[in-house]
Amino acid sequence: MKYRYPIAFFGILIAVLLFSACTGTSPAVPTTTTPVTTAVVTVTPAAAADPYPDALALKQYATFGSADKIGQATVYAYEIKPNYNWTSPSWKSPRGQEAVAPLDIQRGYTTEKPREGNTFLFVYIRVMNPGKNAVVAPSAKQFVLNSNGTVYQYSPVYDAGVTIDKVSGTQYDYQIGRGGTAGYIQPGDSNRAEGYLIYELPATFSPERTYVVSNLDFQTQAVWRL
Image 1 (tube, rainbow, N blue to C red):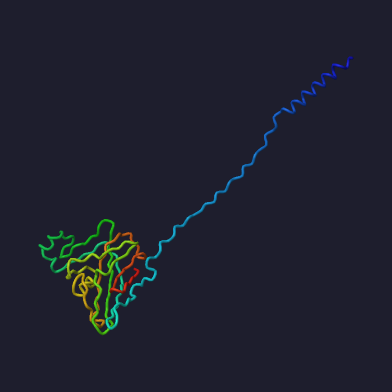
Image 2 (cartoon, rainbow, N blue to C red):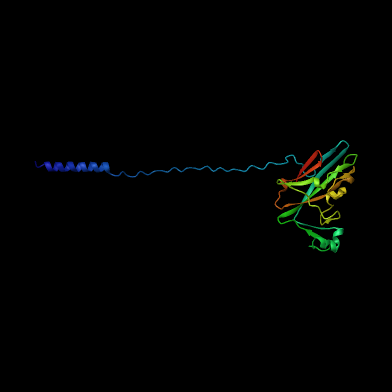
């Protein structure tokens, strides 16, 4: 009988230990987070389609006309000018100058300035007749500028006698007799018509995206890329 109580005590102790093992908190198991890789997709905007993929280069000639009345035209050069100085015989009179604007430069010259943010583009045109009969030349109005999808008409000078500082020749249409209208060109290189046309357009324009477009006659359109 003297061993009964110790045995009972140890039995209770073992039961308590087993119960504690079953209900105890398990040690935390560390978790590993797998990083998610996000793919970066770069979208390159498509280049704008070239409106005139077959455009002529500067100094290349386009032929127009038919039968024995054949003409050739080209755009052979261009210049960008933020402004330009000009004069003419009729402009030298004080009354003529006061009628338009005061002179920015003395000695009969005045400075022509574009609108804010714009610039002037001088385009040089040549039309010749390699045939045997007179041919109708395209007028200045038949040459327009297409720059980045916007069409520009030329800006005519004051009159036929205008001289522009550091620019040789005269406005193209005055070479064929009547400003803005068609004229005739006789055969032979000495009878060729050539000169400049002035366009005003944004100063940020790109020559690579600028074209001179001309309906040389009722059936021929020619395009030159600057």
